[in-house]
Image 1 (spheres, helix red, strand yellow):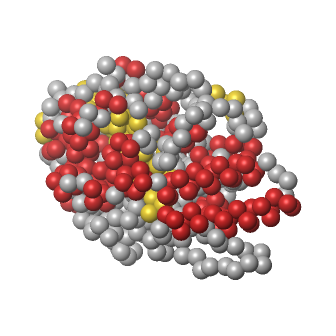
Image 2 (spheres, rainbow, N blue to C red; image 1 turned 90 degrees about the vertical axis):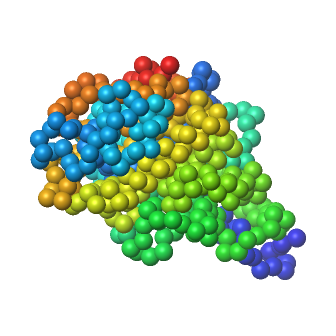
Image 3 (cartoon, rainbow, N blue to C red; image 1 turned 90 degrees about the horizontal axis):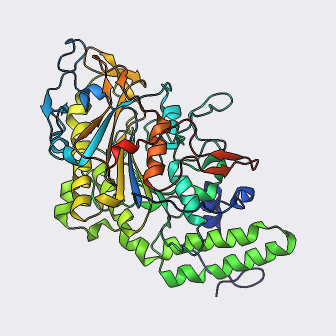
Length: 478
C-alpha cells in the first residue's frame, strides 16, 4: 500500500494525485462547478434515429466553389481552377479532386446553403458546434471561456451521465485527434466550441492528443507511423506505461489525502469528486478503452482505405469508438500549419493535400460504416465553420465568407443521393432553404432523439432551451 502523512512513500511514475488534480484543473474531472453538477436529471428519451454522431469539423473554412457547389456557368473570374465531375446524385457536380465522394454520394445529402453572419474562425467554430452565437470575451480574444455555450457533444454527455443505471467505461463525448488549436503553428489556442462552457467542466469531452514533429509539420497531410498515433488522453498521459495493479494501488494515496482534507473541508464536493475520479479511473483502466483506441487491431486493408494520414486514422478511430459505444465523436481537421482550409493565398494545398485527404477519409468512413451495418444508426456530419469568397486571389486563394458554405450529412435515415438548398449564380448567397447553425444543431439533436427545445438550467438555475430559433430539417430523413 502507498502511504503518506508519516509513512513511507514509493516513487510514482503513473497516475499520481498531482496528475489527477492537473486533469481536474484542465476540466476532465469537472470539480470546479459543483452547482452545475447538481442540475436536474436527464430528460425522458425520445425516439431516435441515431445512436451516435461522428462530427468531422474542417476548421478554417473549405471553399464551396472548390468542393460541393461548383459553378461551371459562372464567369471565369469566379468559378475556380478545378473541373467539376458528375456524382451519383442527380444534378450534383463536385470537384474533380473528390472522386471517391462522387462515387458514394448516393449515401449522403449535400446541404449547399449553410449560412450565418459570423466571419471569424473562433466565433464561427463555436456557432457551428453549439448552435449558439459566441459572446466575444471582454477585451477580445480567440480562446474558449467558461461562459461559452455548451457543445452538442457536451449536452449528450450531460444527458447520458444523468441517466440512471447507465455505467460507461468510455465517455459519451470524445474529441480527436487533439483539442482544436493545440497543433497550430502559432502556439496552442483553446478554440471555443467543443467544450461544456457554463454547463460545467465535467461535461467536457475526453480529448486525445497527438503531437507533430516540428513547427512546420502537418500530420493531417502525411502518412503517420503507429508510434506517432499515440492518441493519449489529455491530462492523463503517463511518462511510462503503468500496469493496472499499480494504477489501482495508487488509489490508497489519493484516499488518504482526501480523508485528511475531509477533516478540514466540510463540503458536498467530495462525493462528486469521488464519482468523477472513479469515472476517470474506469476510463484509464478499462480493457474496452484500450481495445477501442488500438488502431493496430484494424486490418492493414482498412487502415489503408482511410489513409495513413492523421485525418484518415482519426476518422477510423471515430468509427471504432462509436462501435464501442461512444455517442458523440468530433474529429478536427485543424489548421496546424496556420493555413490549411483557411486558404487565403492559393489553391495548391487544396489540390495536393486537403481535398484528397478529405475525399479518402470521408468516403472510407461512409463505406465502412455501411459495410458494418452502422450507417443506419450513425449520423455523419462534415463541414467547416464558413466558406470562401467568390472573388479569388491571383492564385485562387479566397477570403472568409460565412454567408454560404456546404455541409455533408449521411446516415441515421438521411436520404442519400440528395441535395438540400440552392445557391445563387456565384455561390455567394442561398437562393432557397438557407440553413443556419441553429438548424444544424436542431437536426443533430432530432436525430439523437433529443428535443431541441429541451430546457436545461444555466449557472443561475434559469431554464434555457438547447436551441433557440432553429428548425430540425426533418425532410432530410426517410
